[in-house]
Image (cartoon, rainbow, N blue to C red; front, side):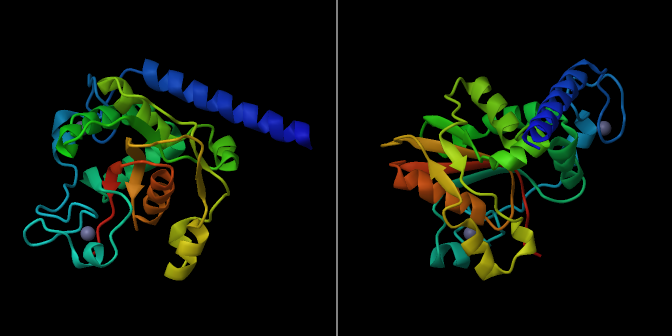
Length: 244
Ligand SMILES: [Zn+2]
Ligand SMILES: [Zn+2]
């Protein structure tokens, strides 16, 4: 039994490695329109058409507000993180692309988004001391073979020569997907879901994830980082789900 689980995990790791290698070696065509000869996973025309975030928007949750001020919900119950940067609204075809990275190991997308987020980091004002991807529980990691958020964080950190730390924020238990749960259960689901193993006294930590939906996961992670001394926690995501 133990042996077969190990074999399966090893197989997944090798599959992820194989996918990474294939992704790097295949001649690039745009993932959306198939245009050949691209150096990036998307051609410039498709990249320009991806769904933008509303302008102006609340700086904490990115939902639209008339003058870019904090929204009512964030004033009433501010999240534990201090700033959010997102590249896109989570809508077609960004949802499909995120899916491609998450389940089909399209690592070229992680590199592309990591660099795009790095270019936006100036807007945070103060320098970042540590980049931490939102971790997967080890069972989920074994299942998938890689953590998509780490792949984005890796390129973001290397582009700006920042310290990448993917070991000191850990997921302590497997949580059910938030979308399946009612609101009260979502909060319970995340209670103590994360642990931090490092002293972050006075640090400005950058948390990296693929998608920001309710913000509850990032809020729970930011809470733990602040309990361990982080002075500020900023968040970088590829896409933000917007309220309709
Ligand atoms: Zn294209
Ligand atoms: Zn808000």
